[in-house]
Amino acid sequence: MQVNAKVDYALRALAELAVADPGPMKAEAISRAQGIPPKFLENILLELRHAGIVLSQRGAEGGYRLGQPANEITLADVIRVVDGPLANVRGLRPERLEYLGPATSLLQVWIALRANMRAVLERVTLEDLVTGNLPPEVVELTETPDAWSRR
View 1: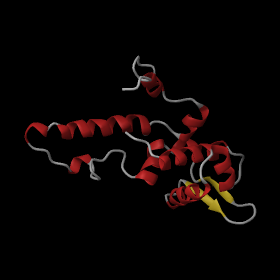
View 2: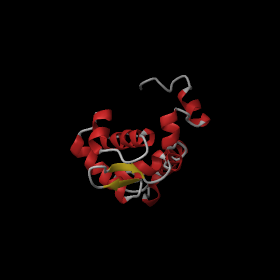
View 3: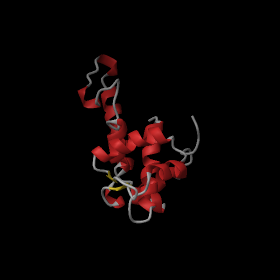
């Protein structure tokens, strides 16, 4: 899985909102805090607002805040909003693919990959992220001998 800048920026922006003081936070403050290009951030926040993940308030005291409690927003929710399905092959969902002959089992590989991504991304919430209290099964994955090795 390749995490693009849009997903990375969206998660970092939401982490800022999750720990912000009560009330709205200006996009400029989020941008400065996380080093996110302001125009890019505005577009991301607009998508998140349309999905109800953030709420916006206009005016001098305006800005953005989470649209739901941080413990109800999973990383998977955010990724799906800003980047689409967690796993696709050539722009298609795995279950829509058909393989023939010796490549038939490839479909099961793509489905298994999606299931594994879900196992992590649907379990970790924004609250888990900002508190550093990740689910034990996620932490366990990072503790395997080759987890930090590049291949």
